Image: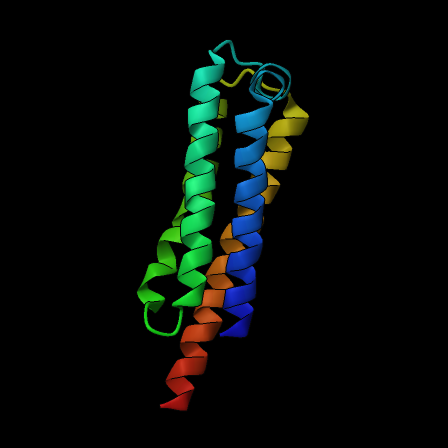
Length: 130
């Protein structure tokens, strides 16, 4: 269970950093990193969503013993981000750099595998205890 708790807290910290970067430096993140032409209000809203998800994930780790069913949505979040970015690349609507695309793929795969494998490990560990 400690492995899963640590993995989820690590992911929550990453989400918070990502959200803070969108929230406080939206023009840099949107313009430089993504090369999107959009308003900074949209970026700040997205940053607030990432900060809220980070807070929710951090608070769920405190109740992990009772609510293990809440772990799997946090496996799906990076997986859905990965699908979205790959979909943009396949549909040829992705405007960012190839280096950033590769980084997004690696980071989202890392978190999907990290949280998913930690959750599986915790589930097997609990099954062995009973």
